[in-house]
Amino acid sequence: MERLQLKQQLKKIEDEKLSFRVFDLDAEHIHAYTAPHQKDHFCILVVQSGDLKLQIEDRQYILNSSRISVIFPNQVHAIQAITEQVTGKIILFEEVLFCSDILKNELSPYNINLSTQLNNTVLSAGEFAESIHTIQLIKNIYEHPSLVRKEEARFYIKIFLLKLIESVHGQHPVLGHKTADQHLYIEFKKLLHENYKEQRSVQYYADQLYITPKRLNAITKKHCGDTAINTIHNRILTEIKRQLMFADITHKEIAFDLGFNSPAALNKFVKAKLNETPTQLQNELAQMYNT
Image 1: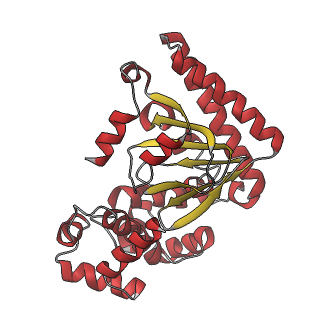
Image 2: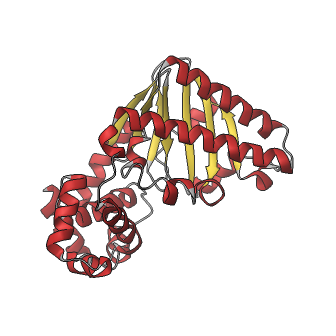
């Protein structure tokens, strides 16, 4: 319900034909994002002046001038103004129209940890000024749309994202370095994203990749510093945390949605991984977003 209300607040009639929206980052829009939300589209936050606290999942960032955040679909997030005056821009855009070919396929070998790295990007003064110029071009199209100009906006948003990724690549060059088995890790993460609710054994994913569990374990240790089973469990934990953020979802509903055979099994899993119950975790997450 909250997500539907937010969408209704941040759109106009013409938006139905555009698949992207651009707003000034002002007090009204900051207030609309204060409560934790989970959206089905991308959100770019650009702070030009002032300080903003951004909570994404269990990570917290301070955004100010020269910092840009790309929030990916389904990432639970909330924002809060630290200073009295905050200015900047918000760009919302749909995943299918703009990013199915860029962020999911073409660029996946370029940076395997793209979603988390783009949550908080620091740009040089020149790069930031260039980004603001590109955003203004997108905003002009939003305010005076046409079929042709819609394609221009798509072009500008791609340029904007590519420059952000290039900046991240420069800050973390090891992430952009291709290795012989990197495609297997990327494919594993894709399979995991699609199947984690039903399949949580290392053997299943190894079979899908036509490799041994031992090799899959070596690949995950190399690329994310963890074992294959822990990578699987961490994906499940991420979804547990996301669902716990919404008070209208019971622990029983979460358990069955994520493939546990009972709430007790969910409780045992969370206790084993985090040494706390789902209720304790839920309270901890609530405090994190309310402080």
